Image 1 (cartoon, helix red, strand yellow):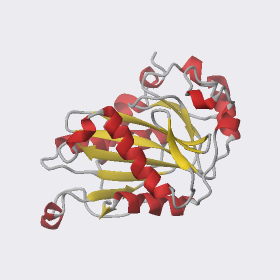
Image 2 (cartoon, one colour):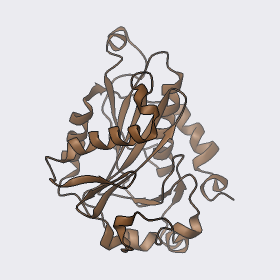
Image 3 (cartoon, one colour):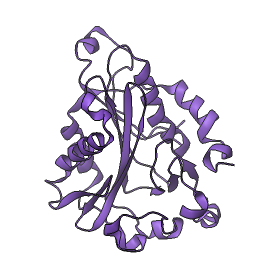
Length: 262
């Protein structure tokens, strides 16, 4: 298994960690395959469900190669140019959260937060959860790109152009919220890999992908630090639920029955 980024403290609970257990943890980690990277977001949510104390975490990663990721209920035939993806060797995988298909690659920073309902009971309302996470992200981005805003349910835009799509998965004690931040992304890749989505926000006005999306005027490193500061994620992790990731890859993300809903 390859690892691109890592910053570090054990996943277990030392006495020092117990006294600071309500701090936001940080995991800056890109694993070696797209299947493992999708599985890690889920594994972090499942691990948080099993802890005795609330444990919130911000994860950052960036796919070194192109991958198409569809939503839990997406219909591939309606959202993905699967023949082209197959021709170019671009994997098509399905995440456990909702929303439409996205393309990830270098130049697209991926972020995920696992947040506790015990610490934040007001976020059991879906509208409140969307608003809280996206406003925290916008707090990070406004100094870098004045004019960024939330549009639709979970898009972030610069003017009328989208640079971030987001989705969530809820469990009993915690929820996962994750999304994309385009900053140096080859926008033409979306036109190649994705069809026009069957559902579109009104502000899109029928625009093709390349006319609808935009890169933020910031580097990946600057975006990383801005998110870390906005979430106050300074409790650095180096360990993570390795076996759970491998189990999820074997049971879900490597299986055509999951990815293609065969």
